[in-house]
Amino acid sequence: MSEAVAGAVAERFTQLYGSEPEGVWAAPGRVNLIGEHTDYNDGFVMPFALPHTAVAAVSRREDGVLRLHSADIGADVVELRVADLAPQSDRSWTAYPSGVVWALREAGHEVTGADVHLASTVPSGAGLSSSAALEVVIALALNDLFSLGLRGWQLARLCQRAENVYVGAPVGIMDQTAAACCEAGHALFLDTRDLSQRQIPFDLAAEGMRLLVVDTQVKHSHSEGEYGKRRAGCEKGAALLGVDALRDVPYADLDAALERLGDEEEVRRLVRHVVTEDERVERVVALLESGDTRAIGPVLVEGHASLRDDFRISCPELDLVVDTALASGALGARMTGGGFGGSAIVLAEESDVPAITKSVEEAFAAAGFTAPRVFEAVPSAGARRVR
Ligand code: ADP
Ligand code: MG
Image (cartoon, rainbow, N blue to C red; front, side):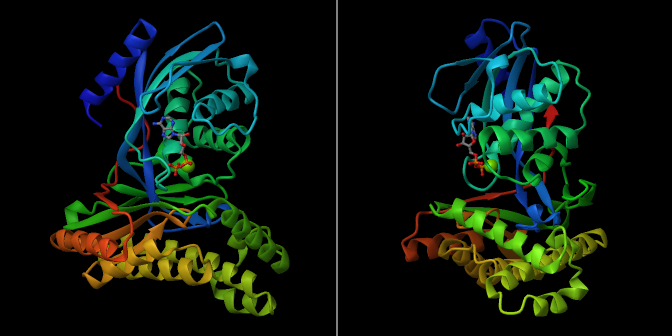
């Protein structure tokens, strides 16, 4: 994120509110390298931050007023009173920042109002977590301005609460933690049960590799209901197996667990995905820590097959990206995010990127799909003050 971007956001703030902002903050979108649909099973995830960020210029207010403006939404400044904020399952964009203010105040932090102007380069609704970037950038700005002294993981918790309770979206803790805690050149190994985390070296450029994000630009409409069904199915699996969460089924005990589930075919498939996915995350961590980065490719492919065949949340567009990229020499590829559209990731040698990109674009055209948006994802920094 350049100084010029921070300057432009600050300048627009000054035009809108008549004085310069006290500061400017940035928080990134994320891609999940591996560990899909494990977060609500108390399992492991491994996101890294994108160079794309939500940038917010913010000043404190002491009169209880919260004013919000987004450069990316064609609307006037929205003015709210912090004392009136209450969960209402409001999915308008202002619910994300005002939900963060609500969550901070509800946790006992004295946030007495603010003026906010933001602009984001994180594509919205592409499975790259524009919503968490938005929440975390506001949380970090208020943390600094009101000297709340909260750590990254604590801000992530409060942002998750804002999204769960105030916005009304049942999301896990991964996105907010990624936005708050990632470091450049690293992926974040996160245990979603106790929130312990480890930075894992993931500097692809130094090793002559690239990671592409292919945004299919589709979002199949049944995705939210299907997410709820998968979540409920996982809970049923844990209950049938007598554990708190599927995280508690050791990989070594998987066959015995599947046996115990008997003819619960649907639940068996969900359990198999979650238990094997946690094991794949641990394998990727071990490979990256031993410097064997190229060897993670086949693990990504295994993960995709599990999401497609066992968890059943892929779609023709995502499968086409993965199949085409692998046929064109990619080291690995998988869908990422919630499924039924959104984005896939492709790990490739730098020299193979042009050919892979071309084949994917051609395959989409031949299939009659909307042209995908392909960009390179450099593992980037988490939330920070930029001015
Ligand atoms: P994702 O997080 O995968 O991008 P979500 O549906 O969780 O998708 O969040 C997208 C929502 O976040 C948008 O509908 C909008 O309400 C809000 N949002 C994202 N970016 C911006 C922005 N730049 N300005 C205002 N609201 C935004
Ligand atoms: Mg989101």
